[in-house]
Image (cartoon, rainbow, N blue to C red; front, side):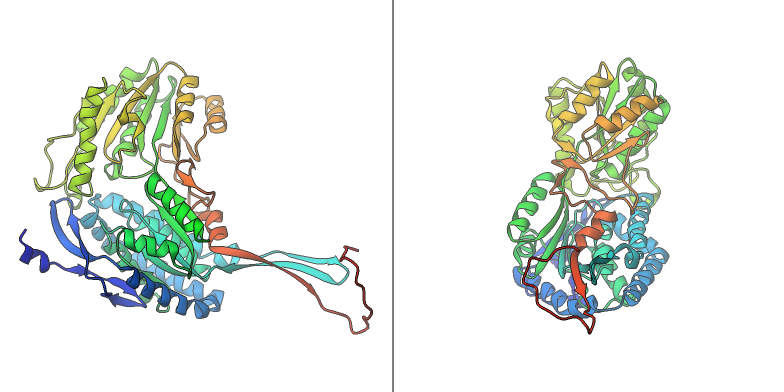
Length: 504
């Protein structure tokens, strides 16, 4: 594509104070259609000045939004829920065009985000305080849950709709104002949702979107008017976000990477396990932090399980997400090439490459960022294939001799995001849920993402701090508790008492 053609592409602006805004920075980044392998748009990259503008808008909008009645806030959120549900097809098309995931996967992502919007509709109940009457003579104590102020959200490329929806509906329903910094790789979904919130009746400045790279991120992390940061992304960046924002006195939700294991016991239904491994390993082209990337097969079932998974992979249709395919492209050419490089690493490290996803026939443009489902067997635990978060359509099989060996393998992992066990033994399942050192556990469920009224988050290097996402943890994160001790004196009261206050 020529430089002239690039300049003629649409430019994605920021969304600040209820309207599109160019900002002062003229830096841009390309936004690809990964199914075509071509730049489709350019997105502006904010400077620290642009971030200051967004934060100032949110700060100015905060007092009025904080003092808006619960009923009016919930009216806006309900309108947003109805609009989003009615027009989710539009958003799904945006996700497919910029991320590459197939339409059914995009609609599923939106459905999970809608669950959090619906959870946020219960904010008047969820944010209630407590009341204790007459704790001492004539003295009552009660608590309030109040918003924080301006909060920042930094979201990843793999779920351009769902991850922002994990955060901003709860933050806004609780009375906060928001500056959202989505991934610059697929930014349009955030602008679309911000415009929909405005259409739903949200006042200007309550939800702002700034696009950018590290400069914008760092500006949010250190800004004195930003009270909290929510982040989902890789472990090194999550650690950086947590340490930097916490150093500057902010609350932080920092959810990191994963290497999720699926333990298959000899008594498991192997057809169910094979279906689950394919669905959880290759959905969204493996670009999700809850993907199963390691199948831990307890002998003697590994040969049969690998054969069943291989058989299922032959029937998967890879191609343009708009064409009803099973799996789409990867997000960028650079990422596709990095993921594909693990095939040679696996072979060099002695693993068996059962299915090689390179050079497959696809239903799409030859220039797209394609890599088909890839399956490795007999992977060793010292290989980078096992150790690294590959974040692509690559599934590794590790063979173990027993449940105990498999459990120990999972617990030694530096990550602790999600895991699953497949078995028909209730005792083994119960023991596993008790002993495994992972934050989210599935029993015959390969991707155990909690529903919206439970919280999402892992252990170990998959979560920094202890603040999980949405559910009760989300309510606690976006509000702070204030305790009030109250005494209304009887007119007949009198006298002075300089002693230490005591319960009487």
